[in-house]
Image (cartoon, rainbow, N blue to C red; front, side):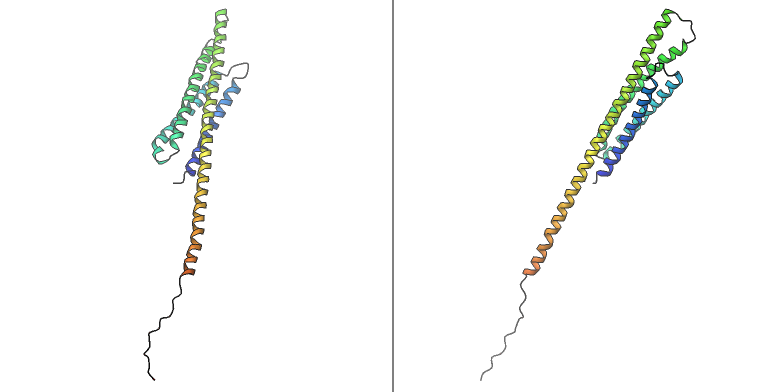
Length: 204
C-alpha cells in the first residue's frame, strides 16, 4: 500500500484548517487591539465565524471516524482534530462571554451616568477584553496543533519516499545480480560431442 498520497492529502488539509484559525485569530486581535470595543453586531459576526470553525472541525472528526479503517493516517489525525475541537470550543465559550458583556454595554449606553453604572461598565469592558484575548489564544493553540500534525505527516511522507527508494534499489540490485548468473550458467554448460555409432571391423 502506498501511504504517500494519504499522508500528503491529510497534511494539506491540516494546513488549510490551521490557516482558517489563523485568520480568525488575527481578525479578533485587530478588532480588540483598539482603545474602543467592536460593535455588538461585529462581535456577533465574530462569534458566528468561530462557531462555523467548530462545526467544520467536528465534521472532520466524523469523517475520519468513519474512514479510519481504510487509512492508517486517520487515527493520528482524528486525535489532532479532536484536540483542535477542544480549543475551538474554548474560543467559542470565551467569546460568547465577551458578546454577553457587549450586550450589557449596548443596553446601558443611553442610561444616565452614575458611579455604579460607571463601575459596571469598566468591569464589563475588562471582561470583554480578557475573554476576547483568551479566545484568540485558544485559536492560536488550535492552529498550532494542526501545524504540528502537518509536520508529523510531512515526516511520514519523507519516510515513505525513503522506504520506496530503498525498495527500488534492492530490486535493481537483485535484477543486476541475476543477469550475470544466467549468462555464466549458459557459458559453463558443456558442449555436446557428436555421438558415433561403432562400425563393424573388417578383416583383411
